[in-house]
Length: 255
Length: 311
Ligand SMILES: Cc1cc2nc3c(=O)[nH]c(=O)nc-3n(C[C@H](O)[C@H](O)[C@H](O)COP(=O)(O)OP(=O)(O)OC[C@H]3O[C@@H](n4cnc5c(N)ncnc54)[C@H](O)[C@@H]3O)c2cc1C
Ligand SMILES: Cc1cc2nc3c(=O)[nH]c(=O)nc-3n(C[C@H](O)[C@H](O)[C@H](O)COP(=O)(O)O)c2cc1C
Image (cartoon, rainbow over all chains, first blue to last red; front, top):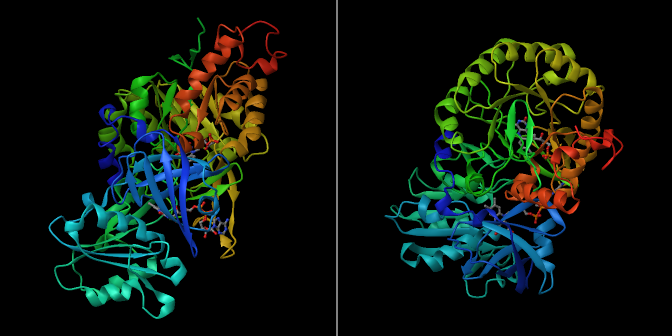
């Protein structure tokens, strides 16, 4: 079982413990459009996060289980998320006025660059809030990126990321998954983050090529690798998404 | 100088705060905290003879003031635990309680024997009460619980805690059974069986349908069990577990009669909280001019704080 192998990689004192400790964060800016919002937080301490990593977040009034949110970017004591305006925590963040306090800890998860084959260039295929880590990746690692292929449902949603070209499904521009299949050619890698339907579409449309990675999503408990809440079965055995994921090679995913 | 140390089960605990079995895994992710400040004890995730991958996801869902889990005893199994995990845990300077579960008495005998002879195992806890595996937990029936504990305690000289379930009509009867069978102490309680429905689909929210409720929501349930059992068996060490997430609930648990206090969901939400609570307890005792933590343990049975003599 993979868990035991990873026990050996437990946090060491040198790595410090700050990523385990909550810190308060103030909502300093929010850009809302359609059913999404980009929420910018000012944190007490720097968050040394990389694309693909996430923070656990909560507010004073819950929810009882903190929620994972992917970093859209980090810069010193500032960081941002892209959130959909539904659900307990996300709706609260999407609607909260500036100055609202919340709490975050992290970063957690493996940076995408640690999971992928560094010898390729990638199509970044994102849908919904799954765009966030890919947008971050595209800024941080432009040399690894062939193109971004992002999709959202309507024009108002797409306007949440004014600097990005986003396919708008409602305008007949098709889905990110379908466009990615058109653009893909042998040798190119894919990093995808979005709904499961998108992954299935990619899996069905691509030859059994290596170099395709998908970000899996599961309910998380601790976020730091202890509670086994977010374990999913893969062809390589059970995997804790919060510690060994969330990005997985497509060929190891069990549908 | 205030003393928060607790002596029971033949061991000395730096303070009464214990990581409950499960949410903190094997405690290894929390090593940086262990290195900085002492903690009473660490209870490992429950180990079974064979590896278990646990239940299908989703395994977690919110509840008012808590959460339901249906992890299903996911663990690497006895041999991998002994070979790969225990050597790491041995490096944590705390009392190490190894939790295990067995499907029948002969398996309990093997597990207790093997774990009891391994170096670094300070105490054993037999989990008789996981709500997330097949069949009825042994702790639901006195005879079954008795057989399991008898087999385990006969196989080792390491003191054995029996972890009981809240979902029984008479916890005192079960407690009596496991004590008679050789348990040295009791851990009360495991998560409370519960269910949530996903309103979008109209189906149970957890893949396995049932789960175990933990967190602040179950504090009163845990306090009642601890109080009842302390009243019936004043001399038996109790690890009071269930719903403790802050100083107030920790104090209540001690006052109700717990010698040690386990933290489950609280650690999942805030990994630093056990160490914070240990410090806050010390500060609280000192503010109240109480020299020794033992003065408040079980004080609810002695007419309250500052009444009667200390244990
Ligand atoms: C690694 C990772 C990174 C993530 N990053 C992001 C991100 O950047 N942005 C983002 O928006 N999301 C992200 N998510 C998803 C997000 O963490 C989850 O959707 C989380 O549950 C949101 O919490 P919430 O409190 O907002 O919503 P929740 O209240 O948890 O609700 C989530 C969904 O479940 C439904 N739901 C909840 N409880 C019930 C119930 N009892 N019955 C029926 N339906 C229910 C809600 O209506 C909603 O549709 C990420 C997830 C992971 C694993
Ligand atoms: C995610 C999770 C996993 C758990 N796993 C175990 C386990 O393996 N063995 C066990 O005896 N109890 C397990 N428990 C129960 C806890 O040890 C504890 O008894 C219960 O959660 C009540 O305490 P709490 O309210 O502080 O969480 C688990 C609880 C949670 C939330």
